[in-house]
Image (cartoon, rainbow, N blue to C red; front, side):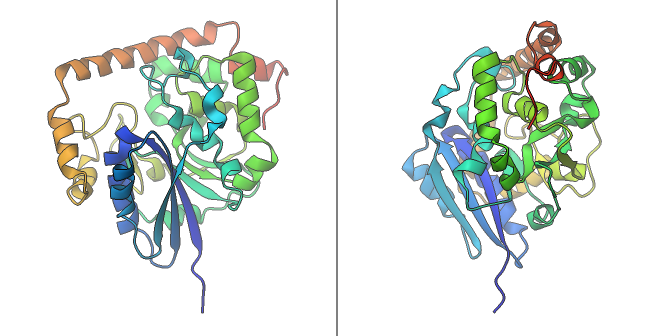
Length: 318
């Protein structure tokens, strides 16, 4: 009897992201190859038991879903502007991906996915990509790289060329190499020592630490609804930043999301959320985007930046 290969997949969420995670899980399950087994792990912060049970019901044959509360290790990561996501809010969940290799020593390789996604492709094809001794398989974050105002930040604050600045929402992860080179402890040490100001906290640390040790995947594995034309065959759609079909009309790739959402146990809540997304919330989104760009322009001129620290030789990369 042949044992099916096992693919570990990780999400990190809190209560508010449960409806979108349901769509991600359903799409992942519906398009998964039957030749593999999938062990989905949801590491969560502040979720109700009934929400967990609703999500758990998505599991099926060869598609397990387990839930684990967030580790206390991250209590040292504090709520301050330099750790804000999208320049407008703080959430511990974005940092959890940095600790996954140590939290799950039984895995040498895994996939990390943000919850604001839809997966029309077969995720096993992504998992099969060889990483060799690289830390990550990634896609260029063209939602930021294509914003001229943010090129200055990427190059002069993080210290990465805009065409090699990657998105941390979709990651093929070499757990073994990241454990061996102590990614989590290096991250905590750097944060405690320098308090780098960032616009994409976990993403910027990964870009700075893992520079030149990543494999660039086909961009269809992180299809973002930004200024580029839609890909004909997106494998993973990532509704990042403010381009979310549960908030706005006419978002690129929205048909994929709504096709799956209508089969979700959270569908009525998703529809209600969109119907209730107010003009005031949309105005706040616009203000947050403007603030993101403004901060991105200002941070490179600070005395302490990732680029300055690493290029001076004060710190070594992984």
